Structure formats: structure tokens, C-alpha cells
Image 1 (cartoon, rainbow, N blue to C red):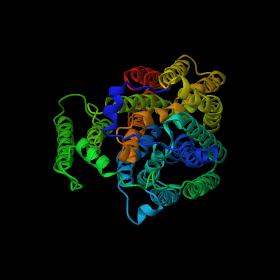
Image 2 (cartoon, one colour):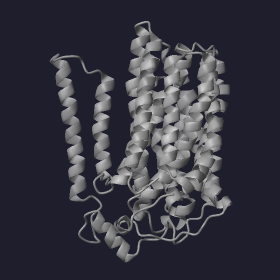
Image 3 (cartoon, helix red, strand yellow):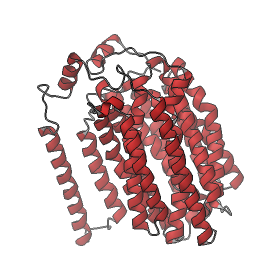
Image 4 (cartoon, rainbow, N blue to C red):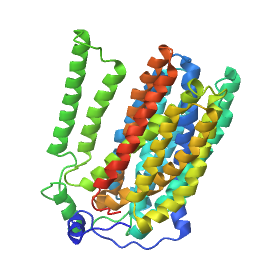
Length: 509
């Protein structure tokens, strides 16, 4: 249960006016949540099974880690700005387009663009082509996801957010199970090329069918009524919002001087950093800065600019900032494990069929996640959000310890069940926690897009740091040590993600 001091409520209401929302039926909760299944079906199949397998089939075993980073990192970087951008556009959609809702047009158009990108990915036969297609898939998927995420604070009353967050977490996990099972059964890099490509096409085809059908369910089942997402803010609310954003009047230009300075400053900082690293390597001043490190540094600089561009202000909204940080480091721990799970099964566990071993691990994670996902959402409504994060982060860190100490196939697979208990609880409470601290009612989708950067940025960092690490130790003849260091990093991330929750002041428990 979330609580605030009266003074906090007064201060918060200046930017987020309190609006009573009607309680929802189970059917309506399920209707606004169902697209979550499609999202994780899509990304579970791609991230855990399909992309690592495609990369391995294209480049071979020796350089698979670095090649996977080349594909994953730029795509994840695209999502850093696509998610808040389309959230921002969705918040400001009005007129004829908004007659169908501020969220639904973007969900539909984004999904259609995503389908086209998936077809390109299935056709890709080299790393550059696959990377470009994956970037487009990220761009269009995030165009649909950002408005979808905003439906939770748009429609769900505060007393039902934990429950709805649990349902969304449940559907995400179920989608992950479905996507990994389907792709794991159909994609096998050990098969001859014609048989492999047949399974690959079937996998992509099933993903397209699932996201299309469930997108239609959301479009026709969720009615964005006047008084929820389609209404324009009242005059007083609009003035408060403009003042909160530092505007002097109601006719503020869409690209203010502050935004122009942010854009120019970000470009200059990026160019200066790139120039310094280039000169460092050219003049041989010390250890050479390789391409992956340069990429990571430049992307982090641009990310700071993107956050500033979309009005992320930690001093003004400290609780929202701490929720952002908590999720960022927790998801960094999760993606450090997830991105390289298939390669870990191949090189450290020595599974005969790594794709199937990764599939089995994810199935166990997902099944035990189902146990905690829904229960944890309800529990957080009654007993507090923070306690769930403490427990879930501790369980996930413990699994990282198991991966370091043993590489027994049986023990590693069994550890998946333990990981799932923590992952399910975290997924279910994650949405409710951010919905409790969103800074501005008139910018729900934009702020949810900013929050989603904490999911996208780890997908940039994890492969860029982890890919070269496992390749280095593989070339040195000790691949197991590379994975041990990788999972030690994951443990640190999960612990940090657990500890930082205590700094969220407006959420007491």
C-alpha cells in the first residue's frame, strides 16, 4: 500500500491533478492488458532464441558474442528515443485522430511497421542487414508500446494498480513462455541450412500472427472514453502543467529555446567525446579504446540528452528518478544473464542442444514466475511495493551465485525455478510502482516512455560489455571464466537494484 504525507500530496497535485477513476471489471483489466502477451511473445522469442541463433549461423562460433552485440545494441539504442518520442506524441494527439483515442492509433501503426521489420529480419543473411532490420523492429515496436504502457495510469484507479500490474506481469510471463517454446522448438542452428531457414520462417510467421491478433483485441476492446485519455486538460490544469515545465504562457512553441540548447549541447558533447577517443587511438596515448567501448560511451551521452529532452528532472521528481534507477540496474542484471544464456549453455554447461536447453530454462523461469506474478501484484496493493522488490532482487542475485559456482546442467536448470520466483514478483510490482510516482497526469505516455528507457538502456549496455568479455576469454581458452565474471556483474546489478528502492520516499513500504 502506498502512502504520502499531506504536504507531499499537495505538492504532487500541482503537476498531477487527482482524478477519480471508476473501478474496473476483470474483463476490462484483461482487455487493457492482453497486448502485453504479444509484446513479450515477440521479444522473448527474438532475444533468447532467434537472434543468438541467427547470429551464430551467420558468423560462426568464434565471434558470435561481438556480432550479437553489433545487432542488439543499436536496436536497443533506437528504443531509447522511440519510446518517449511516441509517448510524447501520443500525449499531444487531439483532433480527428484523437477521436479514435490518443493511444490506439499508435498501437496499430506501430504494430504494422513492426511486422514489416520482422519480415526483413527473416530475410537477412548478413549482420548489417539483420542489425538494420532489428533497429526498425525496435523503432516500430516502441511506437506501439509507449502508448500501450500509458493505458495503465490512464484507466486504472490507484487501488487496482497492483492487481492490474500483476495481470500485466502474468501476461508478459505467459507471452515469454509461448515465444520461447515456439522458437525453441522450430529454430536449431545445428540443422542443415534449408531445414534451419524453414524453422526460422515459421517462427517469424507465428510472431506476426500473435502480435496482429492481440493488437486487434486491444484496439477493439479498450475504449478510450472522454474523461480518460481523450480529454484535453482543463484550463487550470493546463496552466499548472505549463508552469511546471517552465513555460510563461499557453502558446509555448513546440521547440523551445531550452530544447534547442539541449539538442545542440548533446550533439556537441557526442562529437567532442568521439573526437577525443579518435585522437587517443590515433596518437597511441595508452590502451586502445575499441569500437564497442566507443559505441557505449557515445550512446550514454546521447541517452542523457534524450532524458533531458523529454523533461526528465531528478531534482524536481526524485521518486520518479529513483524508480527509473532501480529498474535500470535491475534489468541490467537480468539482460546480462538473458542475452548470453544460450551461449552459456553451449560453452560452459556443454548442452548438446543449447537452443533447447535455453528454452527449458526459460520455461522453468516462466512457470515459477506465474506463481508469484499475480499474487505479488495483489500483495503489493495491501502490504507494500518495496518489500516485493527486496525479496525478488535477492532471489535473482542468488541465481547469479549458482551460475558462478556450478555448471551442472541439472543444477543450472533447477536454478531457473528460483530465478522465476524473483522475476515474477518483480515484473508484477514494477508497473504499479511507477504508476504511483508518475510526475504529470497530462504526460503519462511520455513519462512511461522515459521510464521505459530504464528497460532499453540495459539492452544497450549488457551486450556491449558482455559480448567482448566472453569472446576474449573464449579466445584465451577459458570460456567458463568469462561467464563467471559476467554473472558476477549480474549479481552486483541485482543487489544495487534492490538497495536503491529504499530511496523512493512517497512509497513507504
